[in-house]
Length: 152
Image 1: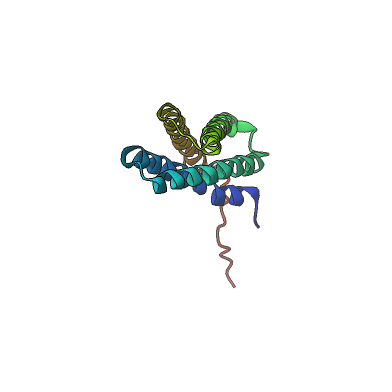
Image 2: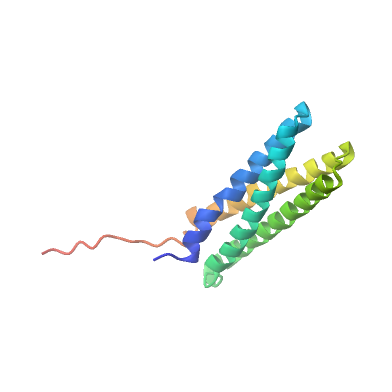
């Protein structure tokens, strides 16, 4: 049966990959100053931010009913980290959109954007780590489907 837990597991890897790869693309642009890398970083940030929002929503749906008991603290910590990630990703995106809209990206704004982007990547990594702990340490959302070994 398809559940929100399955949906979250499918979605969550996109913002991780897109935001981390987008940050490194922005660093490359910062060094080589090629427009291609600036544009690529912007779109990776855009889709990574949207993906982080989708992952947050699907995670909230997946976590419903698991908040009680021994998982409560771990899920709450993961959820708080995810919210910080979404907020930082959106703030970073707003800085980049403003700069693209103004058609000017002064060096100080680019540095501010890069710092926000780095903070976003750090929170993405932390959120992913905490999510991995939920699954691999606490077995959150894991369903044991043992085969039925009935003798004929």
